[in-house]
Image (cartoon, rainbow, N blue to C red; front, side, top):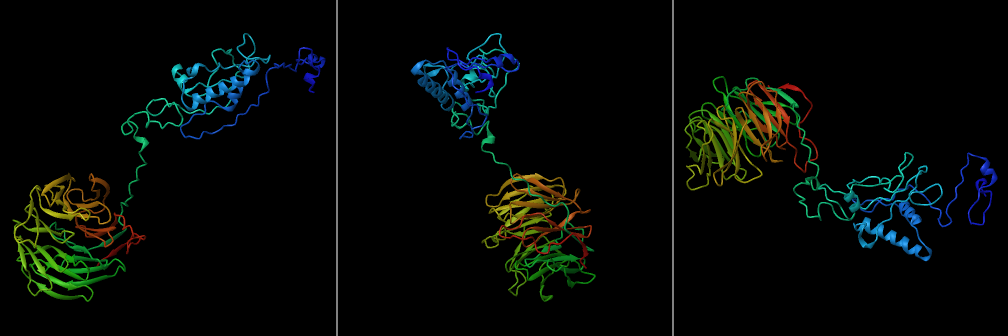
Length: 535
């Protein structure tokens, strides 16, 4: 027996203080009630099963309530079960504390004499309050949190509060969740797509990082500063062809080896170059109207084809058919297997033809001219001498042309200095789909074959390169570095790298597009930043 209770029991059934306890003022005599049972207190947090549930009533509070509810005789167990059931219904089913014909007892207080209920004029002691149900809390105008003392309790400064883990009972719409298992914002009839967008919104994908600096720079002396020429092309065998003055040079992206293919002499200049689709043959357009066909592997000329009266500024291949456009305003279709120099002539432009591109299915060819027109031809059609579509909304020369590899019949075209716009067309219906003012001369367009993005090069007055996302024409990157108009553009075989040429006599290589999904490594021929001379 403790010294505090050394006096033994009296006739009333209570502990009586001993004489030692009375003599020592530092010890305090506690006389608990004979009807109360010892309570085990714990501050352990019991987590809830549901993510949105509330733990408003802990085991400690239920035991405290049960131990302080005044009961008599055999009704004690029934009353405790009633209180416990009331708490469960309030917390799990959202029932009001006033429902069911009974109400929750008021929060008791413990006094030094061991009784329960309010006290007057006595020293304050720790208070164990029962948290209100959600409905009760909202009706009283209090937010979720730790329950305060009961209104029947005695105010004081020494009261303490145990740890109580409570979450807010209201959802994002301000509605009260009556049950912790109710899905907030879904079962209450609210608009889940209107005001609570974060319910279904996943984190946005981060934009792809595009390096703003070229990874390689080549010097290209005598690279002409002429808007109407096409002097750079990249083959399927990863070889770059460049026309410099009167000569054509080949640069291997795999070995960085430079080879001079041909030198036409002082009085002749190269106006355009174009690789065949497999990359074995190179066509060279000359300023006198001739077209030369070369075997790039053997560095041997295969044939010379005439037909144009003036310079040949643009060419494009479709299998064994080569289309050539000239300043004489005509387009010639040539089957390189046949002895004839050409088998069809397309004449509708009223000025120099400066842009030619076959469609991905090789059924149509688009031509752009200095007459500000974009025309669509179907060479296999019975009336192939006339264009099937003619677009006349540009206000300057149309050199930049690109077919979409992702959508049939979709083509983009760019206008010169007076126009500055990129326009999109549906060649099946003849409809103009969109127009974007770029703010500067559009010199070239190229569509990525790996993603639905497009790159444009520009001249006066900003001399920049822009990568666009086609959907909405959102700018992904603006690349600068050239000091003069970016007149030439070609794409690598894997679709990741582009090379640009300008009148500043440099060729710059940029990584702008992602690679094919099946490709795990980087682009072939990609090295560290370096500067070499192409001739």
